[in-house]
Image 1 (cartoon, rainbow, N blue to C red):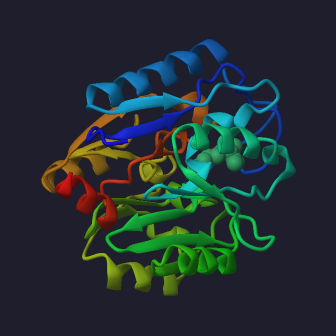
Image 2: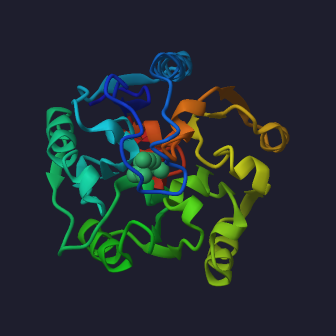
Length: 282
Ligand code: ARG
């Protein structure tokens, strides 16, 4: 992969639906409208292509409705992928398909250490040199520490305290090595202090927009793609020199996901210092 264009992994929503309840957003009584979900997913894909991204796809699999949320597949670091080990058995069947997809992209895929649960980039995001890692609701803090040792990167654990923000990427989105969006009440006081100390430009979102998954943004260059319904965040982003863009993702919110959850950046997030180094030298 020598391409300098951003490279994103997605999975078409052929078999997407609300078939079980593993987070407070999901209710099997509130089904996603299939045609609308397909339309919204294709729109997101097009928005990302228009930003210059190359999209690779995981083939959809019947019986694995959450396979669309590729953010959870693995933690990506250079050419290494640390495969997810899902907390809930409903999602564990996704692991071999994500492994296959990552291997076919040329990644060296390793298992998560021990028997910890770990939900990929959904709970582990680089901002600068540091891997910020959300734990308690889905991923285990000790597992993240061992991955940090394995990859040779510093890990800062952040406890997630609100079940609605059960993955780190629902309440924290690195924009650049020194900048991020976040929803403060999703963290305890200690986590909020850690973020304030290590990320110099923090953009807080209000609860009504956090509920619209404002923090679950895909960053491609200076473009920040979110679900519809986050006008205040978009205003703040414009003031900070970014180009926010919205695209409707209501059918995926019913499963507790939005833009970021539907993507996995294979060449490193914009905010990851290691990815910037690689781009600069390529
Ligand atoms: N229904 C999925 C789950 O609860 C949604 C995953 C969203 N992904 C994410 N990276 N936040 O596991």
